Amino acid sequence: MSESTSESSYFAGKVAVVTGGASGVGRCLVTQLAQQGAKVVLADIDADNIQKVCAELRAQGLEVDGRQANVIKADSMNALAAGVFETYGNVHLLFNNAGVGVKEAAKPLWTIPEQDWQWAYAVNVMGVVNGIRAFVPTMLEKGEPGHVINTSSGNGGITPLPTTPVYASSKAALTSLTEVLHAQLMKAESKLQAHLLFPGPYLVNTNILNSDRARTDEFRVEGQGPAAYVDMAALAKSAGLDFKLTEPEEVAEMALEGVRAGKFWILSKLGSSDDKLRARTENILSRENPPLG
Image 1: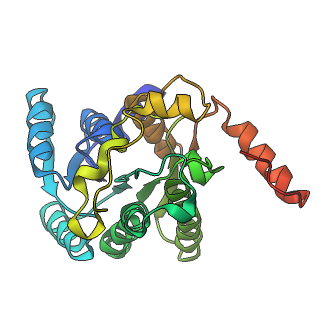
Image 2 (image 1 turned 135 degrees about the vertical axis):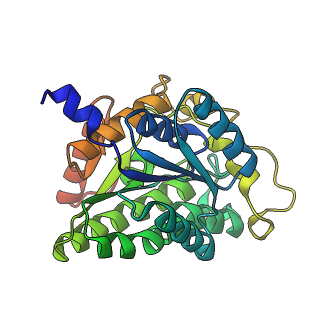
């Protein structure tokens, strides 16, 4: 069997669940998985967008199952899992991909409203925990090979941007959580493998800055204005980062390649990630104070 045939058939027949699947990286994951023969469940909180995206993908001849779910609600994720297992028998690929940003640009962290912290952590951390708790026990019981892929960020997962304390710290927490998941799955001698996806190498061209539309009332900040940046290009410029953006399709390709290769750290070799990792590690080993910025 050729390498290209092996790669194209790796996901064929496997059941994949993608949270945040109706936009950005999630939508590209759904598309590419379906193109490679997986049975894909697109899970998202936005019912209208689910319907729209599924219709567009089905028009391309792709089979996609759209289901509404709210990752911050354990009951919602449990119901999603129960329905998927009932329909498909098992899940082989769980992409905990849903994530949000908040209106925190360049604010001192002690001035950021409590609701912003709660909202970001509810989605970026507890949303993943809820996905793991809903799906992994049954995946383990089934005893088949499988993958749990959590979407982190180089911002926090590797080094934090001082301009985004809420987002960066939530992704740092997710990185540690996924390392623990990896260790515990290995200790259990399970056939499941954990993966940590770092979209990049540059800021990814998604609409995450406009994710406030999904906030429920309990997390809303009265009188809060629009985000300081209209898109990721403006955010990159303000933070002094590479102006070049990474497209979501590139991230999805990298993710699927990493899963096929069995890599825990799914991280681009381009950009400055290696330099940042090296500098951070040397800084810790030398017991020096972190540099400014």
